[in-house]
Image (cartoon, rainbow over all chains, first blue to last red; front, side, top):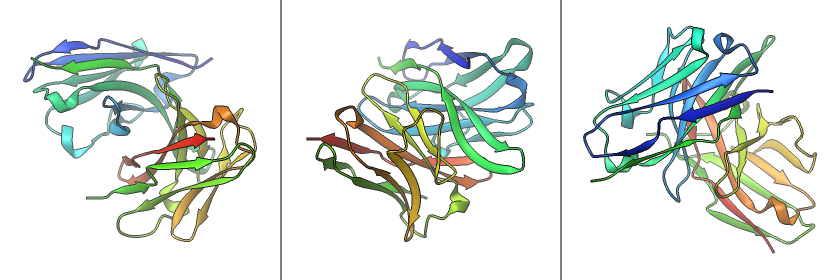
Length: 124
Length: 110
């Protein structure tokens, strides 16, 4: 069974830093792109960042470029999001999601499994 | 800046049919955008419903179907049930490793 378990959320002051983590199980972690998707309180979903299987490619939404860094440790089946220079508007539940790029020769480009999320609150 | 548009809210009667749409602020949605749809109830993680325009995820009833209607992606729900009352989100793949979610549609069944 595929499981994604996030951790590391909490309260941080504006301008501060936080790292959230996601531990994966039930699949070959090193074979999949992974993503972070966030949801501000009462708002919709927002894609934040992706990382390729081997970490060679990283992609970000414009609003977090230069502040957030996505990374992974395939030996530990773990995904990370280092968040620096946090702003009040970064307050959100952060979800870890597995990305399905293709199945055999068929391109798919979607999020097939989701974790339960971890809440990051940026407030003074 | 690319904006993915969805109806903010929709209502459907129990047993009825509703079609939610997913468009682009400029341009058309096609299968090359690989539209996918997700259902989310308050306090829960999203659940994957439809991917690659019209493929149902495992365990999703065939009351849910996806398509391209005109210049938008569409999610149709037939025989609406009370537990279909949720938020529904579409997401489009923009290329170069970038995805953009729509703002979501709050579906009420009454």
